[in-house]
Image 1 (cartoon, rainbow, N blue to C red):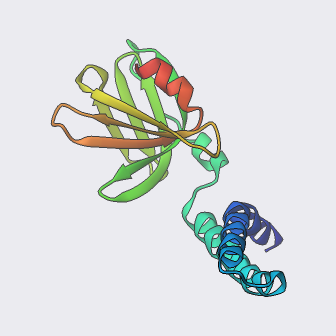
Image 2 (cartoon, rainbow, N blue to C red):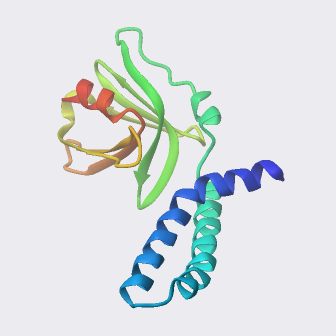
Length: 163
């Protein structure tokens, strides 16, 4: 139980601090006394921290679980990079593991469902780095012009290999 509470606080801390700052700025702009600003801002910031932390804790999978997913490659191909990732599938974000080989892009979900794309059929790759860490998102279009979206850590490594 203590681990879950610690996760909730850790995952929501960024949002709580951001909300506190935003509330303080709004109170200051509205010429509220400093005492009143903190009486209003603190409960809102704590609620924001707990809510966002609970959402992130509930809907994200632990990295250790995702790292244990094994993706098998064909004998004739070489794995270039492999890492835990999120993939947008029909409007839902699914956690799993993403692997790039010299011939294919493979994604295996935490429920062990596999998605495979031929690398030569992928085009129009866009990268969106995160402002918070070294990760980010990239989108790629397949042969049917369907947009595939992935969220990964170390976005620069993926960009270097896909560009």
